[in-house]
Amino acid sequence: MIGPNGAGKSTALKAICGLLNPRSGEVLFQGENISGKQPYQLVEKGLCLVPEGRRVFTSMTVLENLEMGAYTVSSGQLSVVSRKNRQPKIDIRQLVEKIFSLFPVLKERQKQKAGTLSSGEQQMLAIGRALMLKPKLLLLDEPSLGLSPNYVDMVFERIKEINSEGTAILIVEQNARMALEYADRGYVFEIGKIAFEDEAKNLLENDEVRKSFLGG
Image 1: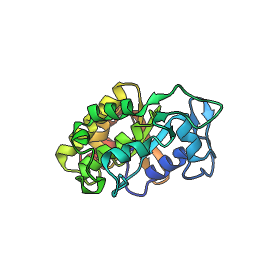
Image 2 (image 1 turned 90 degrees about the vertical axis):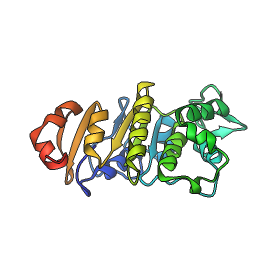
Image 3 (image 1 turned 60 degrees about the vertical axis):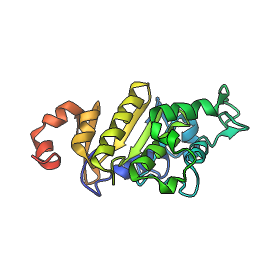
Image 4 (image 1 turned 180 degrees about the horizontal axis):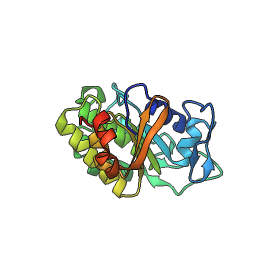
């Protein structure tokens, strides 16, 4: 999802996550209308948001942040809170080690306070924390915001890897060209509406999109 500031991208993301109630229409997830459901209910269904600005727990260590990500945890085991849909228990350590394999720098810094990490490392931690819930749909709000070019490339490579392992990803991103280069499908927002939607490769070649959002 790309477009100018104030066009409604982050608002749409918040509506999907249950942080805002849509004024009209429906939000469908796996064929179910999820409009009006609470955020915790949507997390149980497999939606997880990495908010703009990362918002890690700065006074807690990297490992503690990851453990907090799996907040449906009981006695070192991951289990879904809902009594109706209990899932097989999974060792949290297995999930942590998977995050560490995806972001090796987090393993190196696991005992370090999250507030002392660089912006890029905090973004990796925020994504890792969300992945602790094993989401079906991962929503990312401005994942490249405030990152150096090297970290932008690294974060998008990891996003691609996460997607290749079966997690659907919806991104709101100001770096329009980068987003479209990695995405399968794109949506271009203008104030309060979707102006274009198409396969990402087609949007990259669209003259109007290129002129307005991709620098000519």
